[in-house]
Image 1 (cartoon, helix red, strand yellow):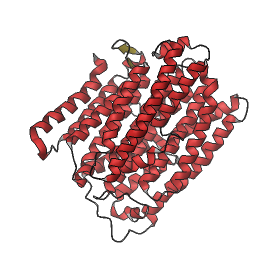
Image 2 (tube, one colour):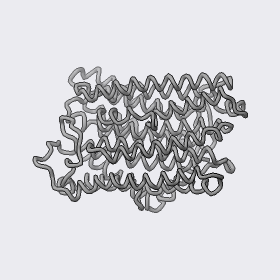
Image 3 (cartoon, one colour):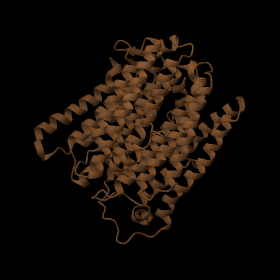
Image 4 (cartoon, one colour):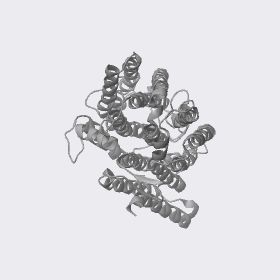
Length: 493
C-alpha cells in the first residue's frame, strides 16, 4: 500500500483544487498554487521515505509498478521540480491576469505520469506514464492561450509529440515481436543474441526517448516550445522531463545488453551532434530564454555522452559508474536550471515579452538577489568549480576517460574532445549573461516588471544554497559534495 502514497498525495491535492474551484466558480481560487506546491512537496517527502525500502526492489499491481532506488530518485526529482514550479506559477500567471486553477491540476497529474513512467520495468506501463505526462504538458504549454506564442508552443509540442509517440509505439511492437513480452526482465532474458527485428525496435525507442530529451536531430520543437510556454512550465519541462526520459531510456538500455555494441557508436555520434548543435546555436541567441532552450539541448548531449560510456562499460558487481554519472548529472542540472528559470520568470514583463541580454543590464543594482542567483546558476551550468554542475560534468568526463583508456580505437577520445570543446563554447554564452548583469548599464526606460514576491525570492535563495552546497559543501544528513554522488551511486547499484 505504501507504494502508492506519493501518487495519493498528488491525486488528493488535485482533487482538493478541483472541488474548491467548482465551489468558487469563475471568480477563481487563489490557494490553488500553494495547495499544488504542498501536494508535490508531500509526494517528494514520501519518495524520500521510500529510499531505504527501495534498496530491495519491490513490485506491485501485477508487476506494473516497481519501486527501486533508480525510480525513487527520478520520482523525487520530478516532485521537487513540480513543487518549485507550483510556487513560481502564481506570480507568473497573476501578472498576466490568467491564474487558472486547472493549470495546477494538470501539473500534479503530469508529475504522477512521470512517476509512473520511471517506477516500472514494463514497457506498456512506461508508455502509459509517458502519454499521461505528455498530454498534460501539451495543455500546460498553451496555458496562456490568449497569447499566440503560447498557443503555437502547445500545438507544435502536440504535433511533434504525437509523431514521436507513434515511433515509440512502433518500436515497442518490434521489441514485443522479438521477445514476446513487454517486461524488461523477460526481454533481457530472451534477447541474449542480436536480431534485426529487436535492433530496429531498440533504435526506434531511442528515437522516441531522444525526442523527449530534445536530442539532435529530434530537437527542432524545443526552442519554440520553450520560448512560447509560460516560463515556470519551461523550467519544469527542461528538467523533470529530461530526468524521467533519461531514466526510462537507461532501463531499456540496461535490459538489452546484447545490442550495446551495435548501438554504442550511434549513441556516441548522436551525443556529439547534440552537444555541438545545442552549444553553437545557444551562442547565436539574443533572447535569454531561447539561449537556455538551446543550452538544454547541449546538456542533453552531455547525458548522451554518459549513455555511450554506459553502453560500452560492463557492470561491476551490479554497479555502473556511467549510470551513477548520469543520475548525478540529472540531480545537479535539475536544481541549477530550476534556479535559472525562476529568475527569468520573476523578471519577465506582464506582456510576456522575452528577456534579451540587454534587459539584464544593471540587474546587480536593481535586484541583487536575483542577479546573484542567476550568476550562480550560470556558473553551475558552465561547470565552474565549487558548483554542483562542475562535479556532475567532472564525473561524465571521468567515465569517458576510463572508457577511452580501456577501449581500442579513437572513438571515446573523440567524445572526450567534443565534451571539452563544447564546455568552452558553453562558458562563452553563460558569461554573456553574467557580463550583462554586472557590466552593462540598465536599459532606458527600465522594463515594467511586477514586484517579486518574498516566496519567489526565498526559492531562489534556497536553490543557490543547494547548488553551492552540493558543489563544495560538507556532508550533512547524507548530502553535500560527496554525499550527492553517494546517492547517485546508490541509485546506480
